[in-house]
Length: 46
Image (cartoon, rainbow, N blue to C red):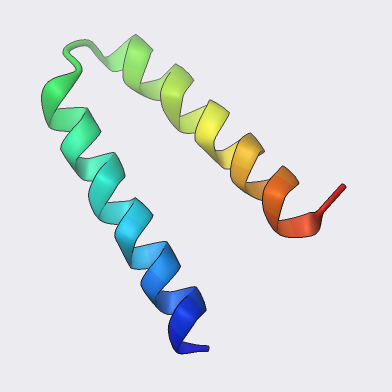
């Protein structure tokens, strides 16, 4: 359980850092959707 929480917190922090570095809301939304889809795919192993 600690590994899952650590994994989630690490990528949450990485996402927050990316939002500071990438200007524009549209690009941020596209990246967020892409990360959610990729994370779902990797987590479920589809």
